[in-house]
Image 1 (tube, rainbow, N blue to C red):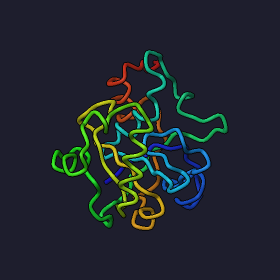
Image 2: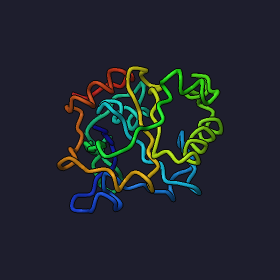
Image 3: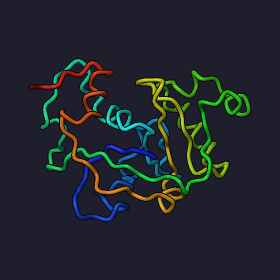
Length: 185
């Protein structure tokens, strides 16, 4: 199972703007594995708190309210569960054998230097993979997943309706605790 936190729009197809599987390629280019001229990067996680943490990390050291979990256009940050059972194996960048085979060091996978991580992702894409997994740089026990949208989305299925997030949601509470984000009363 994968989880994705995203600005949800009720009533849209999962592959459309506001849907759980929507990849806004025109907005990509600054992310860890972005190569928007080659593929859309669909970012997700194996744990709901990791997906949420990736979205709220900019609030570190601050206190948030439910309003901070809504976009200016009113769309709520929501959590979707995504069935990934039909995906083939992902390239696992937390596997020492895979790192050795690719001549990668763990520090290369986790670096904040985006030219390095984008190059790794592009190499994996060009090798024909559907996506990759790696440990979260926010909490190493969390596994994050980047899927190459053009290859992966047809193999994914949204499980139920996305849950709008509030500061009372367990995944928000855990992510905020790990990141040092306060939650308003």
